[in-house]
Length: 221
Image 1 (cartoon, rainbow, N blue to C red):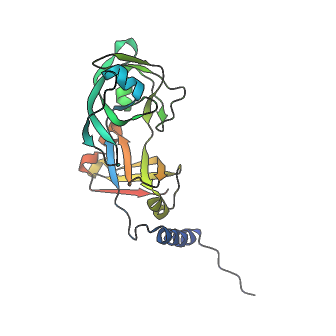
Image 2: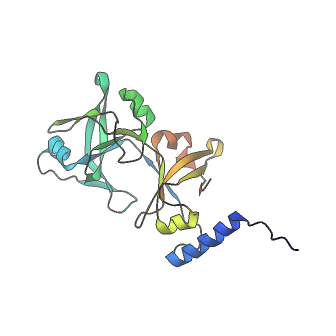
Image 3: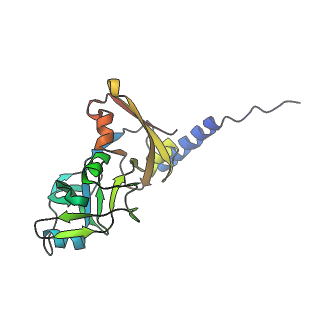
Protein backbone atom coordinates (compact mmCIF):
# COMPACT_ATOMS: atom_id res chain seq x y z
CA UNK A 1 0.00 0.00 0.00
CA UNK A 2 1.41 3.37 -1.01
CA UNK A 3 1.55 6.26 1.42
CA UNK A 4 0.68 9.75 0.22
CA UNK A 5 3.47 12.31 0.52
CA UNK A 6 2.86 15.00 3.16
CA UNK A 7 1.33 18.23 1.89
CA UNK A 8 3.76 21.12 1.54
CA UNK A 9 1.70 23.98 3.04
CA UNK A 10 4.09 26.61 1.69
CA UNK A 11 3.69 25.27 -1.85
CA UNK A 12 -0.10 25.19 -1.51
CA UNK A 13 -0.15 28.79 -0.28
CA UNK A 14 2.04 29.82 -3.21
CA UNK A 15 -0.30 28.19 -5.75
CA UNK A 16 -3.39 29.71 -4.16
CA UNK A 17 -1.73 33.12 -4.05
CA UNK A 18 -0.79 32.92 -7.74
CA UNK A 19 -4.37 31.99 -8.68
CA UNK A 20 -5.85 34.84 -6.62
CA UNK A 21 -3.40 37.36 -8.08
CA UNK A 22 -4.34 36.26 -11.59
CA UNK A 23 -8.07 36.57 -10.85
CA UNK A 24 -7.59 40.05 -9.33
CA UNK A 25 -5.38 41.24 -12.14
CA UNK A 26 -2.54 41.88 -9.72
CA UNK A 27 1.20 42.18 -10.42
CA UNK A 28 3.02 39.21 -11.91
CA UNK A 29 6.28 40.35 -10.31
CA UNK A 30 7.09 41.47 -6.78
CA UNK A 31 5.62 44.97 -6.38
CA UNK A 32 7.88 47.92 -5.58
CA UNK A 33 7.86 48.87 -1.91
CA UNK A 34 7.93 52.55 -0.98
CA UNK A 35 9.09 53.36 2.56
CA UNK A 36 8.04 56.76 3.89
CA UNK A 37 9.14 58.38 7.12
CA UNK A 38 6.37 60.34 8.80
CA UNK A 39 7.58 63.29 10.86
CA UNK A 40 5.39 64.50 13.72
CA UNK A 41 2.09 65.85 12.46
CA UNK A 42 -1.59 66.24 13.21
CA UNK A 43 -4.92 65.65 11.51
CA UNK A 44 -7.57 68.23 12.39
CA UNK A 45 -11.34 68.08 12.52
CA UNK A 46 -13.38 70.77 10.77
CA UNK A 47 -14.36 72.16 14.18
CA UNK A 48 -10.76 72.53 15.30
CA UNK A 49 -9.62 74.07 11.99
CA UNK A 50 -12.23 76.79 12.54
CA UNK A 51 -10.96 77.43 16.08
CA UNK A 52 -7.25 77.38 15.25
CA UNK A 53 -7.32 79.26 11.93
CA UNK A 54 -10.67 81.02 11.82
CA UNK A 55 -14.26 80.11 10.79
CA UNK A 56 -14.47 78.58 7.33
CA UNK A 57 -10.69 78.41 6.90
CA UNK A 58 -9.50 75.97 4.21
CA UNK A 59 -6.17 74.17 4.50
CA UNK A 60 -3.70 74.91 1.69
CA UNK A 61 -1.86 71.93 0.20
CA UNK A 62 1.91 72.36 0.43
CA UNK A 63 3.04 68.91 -0.71
CA UNK A 64 0.97 66.00 -2.02
CA UNK A 65 1.72 62.71 -0.31
CA UNK A 66 2.20 59.29 -1.90
CA UNK A 67 -1.35 58.16 -1.16
CA UNK A 68 -3.88 59.79 -3.47
CA UNK A 69 -5.86 62.68 -2.00
CA UNK A 70 -3.63 63.26 1.05
CA UNK A 71 -1.31 66.22 1.53
CA UNK A 72 0.96 68.08 3.91
CA UNK A 73 -0.62 71.48 4.41
CA UNK A 74 1.14 74.84 4.55
CA UNK A 75 -0.30 75.30 8.02
CA UNK A 76 1.42 74.36 11.27
CA UNK A 77 0.36 74.65 14.89
CA UNK A 78 2.20 74.77 18.18
CA UNK A 79 1.81 71.78 20.48
CA UNK A 80 2.08 72.18 24.25
CA UNK A 81 2.40 69.27 26.66
CA UNK A 82 2.37 69.00 30.45
CA UNK A 83 4.36 71.53 32.44
CA UNK A 84 4.30 73.88 29.43
CA UNK A 85 6.78 71.87 27.37
CA UNK A 86 6.20 72.76 23.73
CA UNK A 87 7.21 72.22 20.11
CA UNK A 88 6.65 75.30 17.94
CA UNK A 89 5.82 73.63 14.62
CA UNK A 90 3.56 70.66 14.16
CA UNK A 91 2.64 70.10 10.52
CA UNK A 92 -1.05 69.74 9.66
CA UNK A 93 -1.99 67.00 7.19
CA UNK A 94 -5.13 67.11 5.09
CA UNK A 95 -7.86 66.62 4.26
CA UNK A 96 -9.80 67.28 7.51
CA UNK A 97 -10.87 64.27 9.58
CA UNK A 98 -13.81 63.54 11.82
CA UNK A 99 -11.55 63.61 14.90
CA UNK A 100 -8.34 65.48 15.62
CA UNK A 101 -5.31 63.21 16.02
CA UNK A 102 -1.68 64.03 16.88
CA UNK A 103 1.07 61.61 15.83
CA UNK A 104 4.48 61.83 17.51
CA UNK A 105 7.72 59.89 17.48
CA UNK A 106 8.93 58.54 20.83
CA UNK A 107 11.53 61.30 21.22
CA UNK A 108 8.88 63.95 20.48
CA UNK A 109 6.64 62.51 23.19
CA UNK A 110 9.51 62.45 25.68
CA UNK A 111 10.38 66.06 24.88
CA UNK A 112 6.77 67.11 25.49
CA UNK A 113 6.35 65.00 28.62
CA UNK A 114 3.48 63.05 27.04
CA UNK A 115 3.12 59.30 27.62
CA UNK A 116 1.82 58.59 24.12
CA UNK A 117 0.76 54.96 23.49
CA UNK A 118 1.47 53.07 20.27
CA UNK A 119 -1.81 52.91 18.37
CA UNK A 120 -3.19 52.50 14.88
CA UNK A 121 -4.59 55.65 13.35
CA UNK A 122 -8.10 56.33 14.63
CA UNK A 123 -7.75 54.25 17.80
CA UNK A 124 -7.87 57.17 20.24
CA UNK A 125 -9.81 55.83 23.23
CA UNK A 126 -8.01 56.50 26.53
CA UNK A 127 -5.11 58.33 24.87
CA UNK A 128 -3.57 61.49 26.37
CA UNK A 129 -4.28 64.99 25.16
CA UNK A 130 -2.37 68.22 24.62
CA UNK A 131 -2.93 71.86 23.76
CA UNK A 132 -2.78 72.99 20.13
CA UNK A 133 -2.24 76.67 19.38
CA UNK A 134 -2.94 78.30 16.03
CA UNK A 135 -2.95 81.90 14.80
CA UNK A 136 -6.61 82.43 15.73
CA UNK A 137 -7.14 80.31 18.82
CA UNK A 138 -6.26 77.23 20.84
CA UNK A 139 -7.71 73.77 21.42
CA UNK A 140 -7.40 71.88 24.69
CA UNK A 141 -7.42 68.37 23.25
CA UNK A 142 -8.61 65.87 25.84
CA UNK A 143 -7.43 62.81 23.90
CA UNK A 144 -5.86 61.99 20.56
CA UNK A 145 -2.06 61.92 21.00
CA UNK A 146 -0.45 58.67 19.81
CA UNK A 147 2.73 57.12 18.56
CA UNK A 148 1.62 55.63 15.27
CA UNK A 149 2.06 51.86 15.07
CA UNK A 150 4.31 51.00 12.15
CA UNK A 151 2.13 49.84 9.27
CA UNK A 152 1.96 49.17 5.55
CA UNK A 153 -0.70 50.44 3.18
CA UNK A 154 -1.55 48.24 0.21
CA UNK A 155 -4.38 47.40 -2.14
CA UNK A 156 -6.06 44.01 -2.28
CA UNK A 157 -3.93 42.89 -5.23
CA UNK A 158 -0.72 43.52 -3.29
CA UNK A 159 -2.26 41.75 -0.30
CA UNK A 160 -2.97 38.74 -2.49
CA UNK A 161 0.63 38.75 -3.72
CA UNK A 162 1.99 38.65 -0.18
CA UNK A 163 -0.69 36.28 1.09
CA UNK A 164 -1.95 38.68 3.76
CA UNK A 165 -5.18 40.46 4.62
CA UNK A 166 -6.18 43.62 6.40
CA UNK A 167 -5.03 43.50 10.04
CA UNK A 168 -2.27 40.93 9.52
CA UNK A 169 1.33 41.74 10.44
CA UNK A 170 4.43 41.73 8.25
CA UNK A 171 8.14 42.47 8.62
CA UNK A 172 10.41 44.88 6.78
CA UNK A 173 14.14 44.41 6.23
CA UNK A 174 16.07 47.59 5.50
CA UNK A 175 19.61 47.08 4.22
CA UNK A 176 21.74 50.17 4.87
CA UNK A 177 25.29 49.07 5.60
CA UNK A 178 26.06 48.83 9.33
CA UNK A 179 22.53 50.05 10.16
CA UNK A 180 20.71 47.13 8.49
CA UNK A 181 17.51 46.61 10.48
CA UNK A 182 14.46 44.35 10.52
CA UNK A 183 11.20 45.93 11.68
CA UNK A 184 8.60 43.45 12.90
CA UNK A 185 4.90 43.92 13.52
CA UNK A 186 3.96 46.13 10.57
CA UNK A 187 0.16 46.14 10.54
CA UNK A 188 -1.41 45.60 7.10
CA UNK A 189 -3.89 48.31 6.07
CA UNK A 190 -5.41 46.84 2.91
CA UNK A 191 -8.21 48.32 0.80
CA UNK A 192 -9.21 48.79 -2.83
CA UNK A 193 -7.35 52.04 -3.53
CA UNK A 194 -4.12 52.31 -1.50
CA UNK A 195 -0.67 52.14 -3.04
CA UNK A 196 2.00 49.94 -1.47
CA UNK A 197 3.73 52.09 1.15
CA UNK A 198 5.33 51.43 4.52
CA UNK A 199 5.06 54.15 7.18
CA UNK A 200 7.77 54.49 9.82
CA UNK A 201 8.26 57.37 12.24
CA UNK A 202 11.41 59.52 12.39
CA UNK A 203 12.99 57.52 15.21
CA UNK A 204 12.60 54.28 13.24
CA UNK A 205 13.80 55.86 9.99
CA UNK A 206 16.90 57.30 11.64
CA UNK A 207 17.70 54.03 13.41
CA UNK A 208 17.74 52.21 10.06
CA UNK A 209 19.47 55.10 8.21
CA UNK A 210 16.63 54.85 5.70
CA UNK A 211 18.01 57.69 3.55
CA UNK A 212 20.99 55.51 2.64
CA UNK A 213 19.15 52.20 2.28
CA UNK A 214 20.28 50.10 -0.66
CA UNK A 215 17.47 47.56 -0.46
CA UNK A 216 14.17 47.05 1.34
CA UNK A 217 12.22 43.80 1.56
CA UNK A 218 8.68 43.39 2.82
CA UNK A 219 7.82 39.86 3.86
CA UNK A 220 5.35 37.73 5.76
CA UNK A 221 6.99 36.28 8.91
